[in-house]
Amino acid sequence: MLLASAVVVWEWLNEHGRWRPYSPAVSHHIEAVARAGPRAGGSVVLGQADSRLAPYIIDLQSMHQFRQDTGTIRPVRRSYYDPSSAPGKGVVWEWENDSGSWTPYDMDVGITIQRAYEKQHPWVDLSTIGFCYVIDFATMGQINRQTQRKRRVRRRLDMVYPLVSGTLPKSQSWPASPGAAAAPPAPACACPQCLLVMSVKAAVSAGGLGAATLQPRKAPPAPPIAPKAPAPTPGAKVPDGTAMARGSLKPLGSQGVRRQAASTPALSPAGPASSPPAVGSSKAARPGLGTMNRSHLQRLAIAQSRVLIASGVPTVPVKNLNGSSPVNPALAGITGILMSAAGLPVCLTRPPKLVLHPPPVSKSEIQSIPGISHTCRKTTKKQAKKGKAPEEVLKKYLQKVRHPPDEVRAAGLAWAVCRDCTICMERLSAPSGYKGPQPAIKPDLVGKLAKCGHIFHLHCLVAMYNNGNKDGSLQCPTCKTIYGVKTGTQPPGKMEYHIIPHALPGHSDCKTIRIIYNIPPGVQGPEHPNPGKSFTARGFPRHCYLPDSEKGRKVLKLLLVAWDRRLIFAIGTSSTTGESDTVIWNEIHHKTEFGSNLTGHGYPDINYLDNVLAELAAQGITEESLAQEKD
Image 1: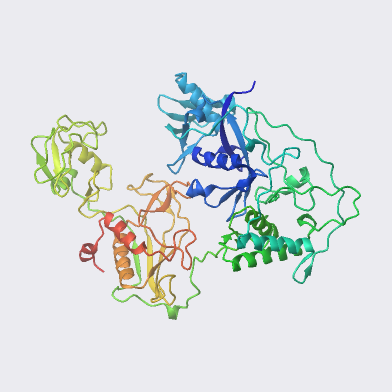
Image 2: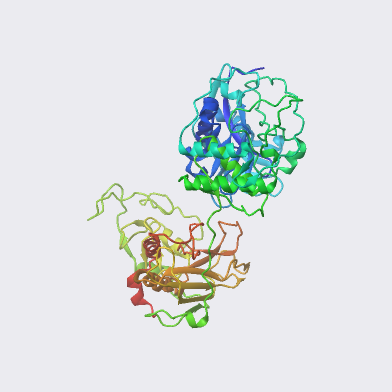
């Protein structure tokens, strides 16, 4: 039964064979280009709808997504759903992954969850659609039926996906079927880029590029013209377009599909397909891309890149153009031609190289840093102030409040005092709501922190201190003001630092300070998340870099204080790999790329030194701290 209307959801196929939905905003953008028909060029630049998707382009003719910086190709499809389902209402169901961010469910899973939610079921079993999970709406949790592991889920509202009604728009038959009435041809673009691309194509059709002569292989017989395919109905899914290589006009069969891995480009015509030559025609077939050998394709790709770069066309770097990956270098170049002909001002080139380390440096070239004694620091044991009861520590930082605030204003402060304790979320005029181990202090006493003026139950502050590092310091849970000297839980290790005779990008006027951190694996102590359990230390020694300038040396001195206070590293779960019980960075960013900035952890970065000074200050480490520490 055909639906009178439907919502359109554009999806892409991931490496696990699951169709993943684009966001509503991206689907609206793709749908708008698809509805515009061939006049829009047939390519969708996803970065125009979502800046995070800047490397991705969709070719609507072949129904594939192309990633420009890696050459990865993935199928896409246009799916239809009932307007009364989750995508038609703008409802998105998501689960919390190991890094703490939220991932949307596949569309069919989200629709199943929403249907049960609307029927006010207490839970829904997803095993009926192939997943061993149960969603508990009371706790908003996902439970793995096999491992009993629980994750949080959430329901949020977003844009409604695009709606189509009645007969399908012309974009549904994109690309146009052979029997469809052809639109009047648009005038050829006269911009320099298109003229250059056409000149390259003309050179190919003429039989060569420069001194290279293209020798066509034996032309295969022309395939019979396929009958006109019926237009899909609103309730049907659009099949992926059949990829054709210009010149040969030979469909890529099952064998070609198997050879074409997920990262191999599928070439599609840049414009309307030319009519196949008649069988038995005496006119010799022109050499096309499908008849060129590898060396000819490489020459074509190089020539096209040089022409486009010379004309000022922006370049898009593509990895592995040396032929070491499944992305054939010539195919990547030809893809650049096709995308350019479709109106996309791009040229595929080799990306800049990742430069993590400086050139080799001899021991005689390494210098100590003026004003800083030694070239190495070690931490071997926990440096915490012990022996004082929590109540004694808090007395130094608190003022007792005889009458807890109700709706009053603090003396000398322009903001109203909160009536609730932000630790237990109970009224300050009521006893503490903390339910853990009970400190030896009355639950109804209230105190105010001296510097920031925030008010809490003393009972809650003692419990918070006991659950922390117990180092004699306290940090306001509301504004993060630090009282005392904050220390961390960094495991034992070594920090080396010296000057090397090379300059960082953006700091050509000075040499470089190199810092080398080395922390071995070991066993967690009582201050760590899992005492007695072993921890790993991946990626050590870690090399970091600062400019040997006045501000760079200032940052190094403060980093030495942070190292002594065990604040550079911690033990936890890696946000990169998801591994738990491993050494991780602790909120003080370092630059680990020496000669590039491809990962965001290199130079040039004009704001880095100021940013890291602010991060150190947030840990209680400022220039005043230097006077408290022995160099």
